[in-house]
Length: 188
Image (cartoon, rainbow, N blue to C red; front, top):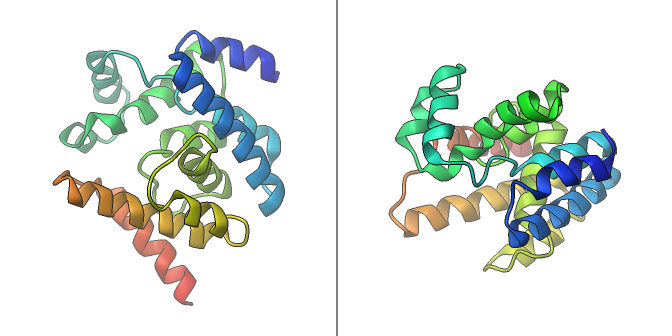
């Protein structure tokens, strides 16, 4: 699918602010793919569609999770996680995207997962560091992402976990599992 067609499909699903975020994620994902040897076309497509379901009704996302074999424990955690797996399903169904790597990168861009692929890491990190993001710690992660994708990813996950803990919110287990796996890899 060409960039303009993809952007047109996504634009009607998002607010103007979220569409600008999506453009930032797209440019960041392409840059990270170039820097770390990823597939630029897959990075572009996954970035464009990563928030496709962000503004769908919670009941619709819940129904997709229940009906289509997604982990049911997602429903026990913050609904902000739901748009990622629901989005992967809807992108396949409504936009005709069938590349499993692109769909997985969309599915795991909020939680991470053990065994993250290069594309998964690129989309997770691009979503975190795109130029429109402004919060404590983001600049440090941006700098780290110039040199080492895994170290930047670890810092982003650490920041996310600390943020959730300070707000007394639950942390999805796959986020911890992702953190542990990458930390062990970096220690080897």
